[in-house]
Image 1 (tube, rainbow, N blue to C red):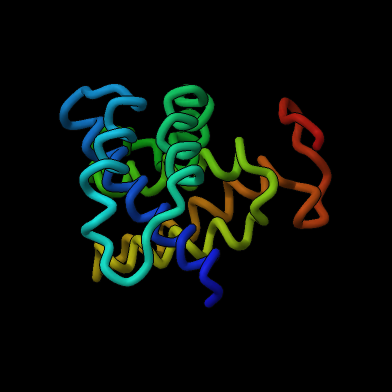
Image 2: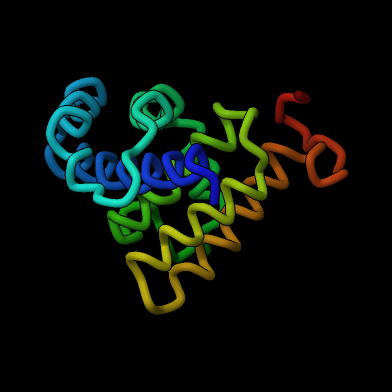
Length: 158
């Protein structure tokens, strides 16, 4: 893995942790991002996270929160709601959805692979498979052209 890819992977992991913290503490994106960069990036021993990429995810999720949560909720069965999903799993899905919606410079398949790997870091059960399935469904809707599919009604055509 290249140094840039490793720095982005570390940024994604840090972003998931920051999104989790934001949800639990109610802290704002800017404040949490600054705290992570100043104090928690040192905890990453192998590769330091890409601070710019990290900040884009952490501050981008709240900007696109409604669209992100709707996309995730559409992947859930009728008996499940967003609040029933584990908070770490929500953070993983939200970070990934932001990239699918707001970072079109990152290929959808890369986003899916990276966040499934993060899910495996946190969960040993069925959760990584759920993340894979949910993100594949969301990506095929939000990035239909990348999969050779027609743009679904109600989605922007990029």
